[in-house]
Image: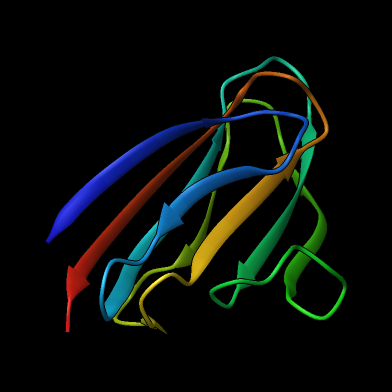
Length: 104
């Protein structure tokens, strides 16, 4: 397995792009600020763009100094080559994404 860490901003931030076929085994968003922030999470097919049809979490509130796990405990998100995950934060800084993935 491989790990990727990305700082998320208040514009769509790509936190993971699949190379060949992969599975996301863990995706955690952490709020490092002193106040609550919200995020939107999109899972987008190759060649697509973020939209209401590929949003998996809308205005998800993450409390100050807290984390949210989207995929954990044996769950997996299977992606084909070029599929990607984007996150949008309500603030320019303060949200960090950690993604663990493996080739399938």
